[in-house]
Image 1: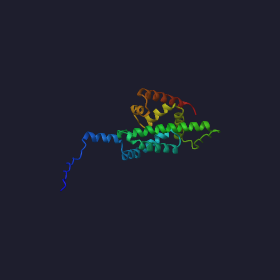
Image 2: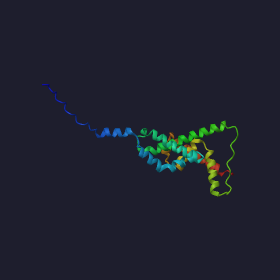
Image 3: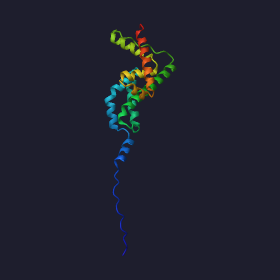
Amino acid sequence: MPVIAPMPAARPARIPNQREGADETMAAGTTVDHLTETYRAHYRSLLGLAALLLDDTASCEDVVQEAFIRVHSARKRVRDPEKTLAYLRQTVVNLSRSALRRRILGLKLLSKPMPDMASAEEGAYDQLERDSLIKAMKGLQRRQREVLVLRYFADMTEAQVAETLGISLGSVKAYGSRGIAALRIAMEEPV
């Protein structure tokens, strides 16, 4: 009769402790649901942010959608879900910069000048003032425009603007004050 060896004792299932579970959660990044919810909740403000940096609606929508796609593909790097909106804003700013660079290159390669935009025939005061503000904003340096848009349109604090643009708090204050001074001068000039 053959001798049957005893079966080894079954090992109890390993239960991760709380610390290990927390590490796995942090390594996972932000969830798709959280990212989607943040995108939906802040779509209009992200679109407005792009609109102040760019000039046509189609490009703004493209930039905001591309920002969502890029943050979605890199969502594991967003360790703190509360920073999801900051990542989206930063991506919108970066993609807007890239779009402007492509336009400038396209204008340099363009053989004939682009026609000027038609002026508003109705002459509504609000529209004229808005047009002059947009024109004045376009005349600012890139950093000054970005700081003013993030600070006053996106309603971000100076610290948030500094983090978003990757510059110091002092630089945010300097660009902001110089930008406002330049806007005052530009808005006082007769059209």
